[in-house]
Image 1 (spheres, rainbow, N blue to C red):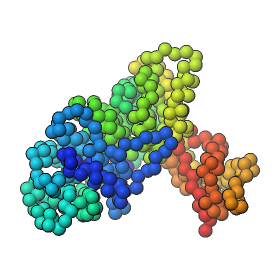
Image 2 (cartoon, one colour):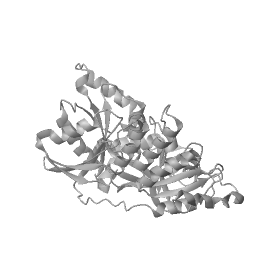
Image 3 (cartoon, rainbow, N blue to C red):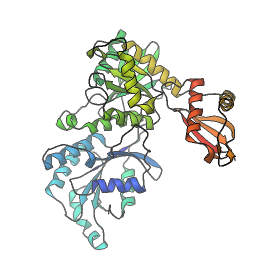
Image 4 (cartoon, rainbow, N blue to C red):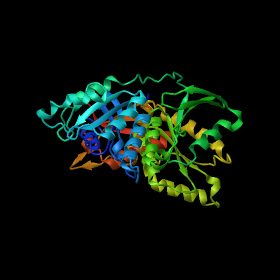
Length: 436
């Protein structure tokens, strides 16, 4: 089920990033960085009063050397395109400007819910001037202060009221939802077309929950798939071609609704930081993953080429050591037949359950091979383990004291679980708990 998306939009110097950071610091839990993953704070998963949503700071989108008004307009267009609800931010110290009115015109045409926030209203005297902002035509303006954290609760209360019903309409439990994500021009559209055209598969269009996108239903070898569309950028223009961060926004929506995520890498241009950023979000979300090296036909290959490239991928994506790597060419369809079996395997492992007795046999064998460590004279005792969730598989290990579980020994147990049960293509989570 996709979460609602909230975007903060407004001209420069109204405090977009300050509000974003304030919400991140006080209201939002951000997933911690993993080794080998870089982050831009343009996006954060958020929660307000037990309601989860995704928050976008359009101020974090770099539009290069475009003139100021063009940048403002383009950032507003990105927000309109991506968001379910828009926080339109004004500067209470400067009043309504021409740039504010230009953004307002775009927002009116969008028919998206807009919540008006007037920032930098730091004292009660300034709040008496809030009434002039009713002239913007977006209903009640909310006086807030990003620097002091005032009024944000009322603002978020209003934002949550406008969230749409995000229930997933697809009840087919045996259908694998997978998406293709990656940098622009790595061949996402070409690969989708190659998959759909192979062996005259059965194809029908169904409406997806992602705005302006159509998911595609695929039946192949008796198995049902839905390809979640991230490749088709409906709005063409320089803003989408030059802003790499825009591809992250597209990818985040697709990740939310996927069982399996395919991260595409261009064999010709090699691995970029952007590839690791996008893959990191899917990893943090706990999705099954397959690394796809596309355009394999464009490079001169030897017997060692594939192994050498695989070594590079593993070095850059150390946090995806569980993900299989598929080499193919969407253009020539070379090795295209290897892709869906990898997706199928990753999906099955993502939903795999291990009986408790079998799991504990593996844990006890691991302890016999490598006894639990002793820390400050106290030895870790593992009592038993059980699986508590799937998608991704999650295990709780009950111990005498969780403080005695060193990360290296936790990693050892995770590796032994993988050796015994595979779990190719999916992350697994291990939690230490004290037995009550």
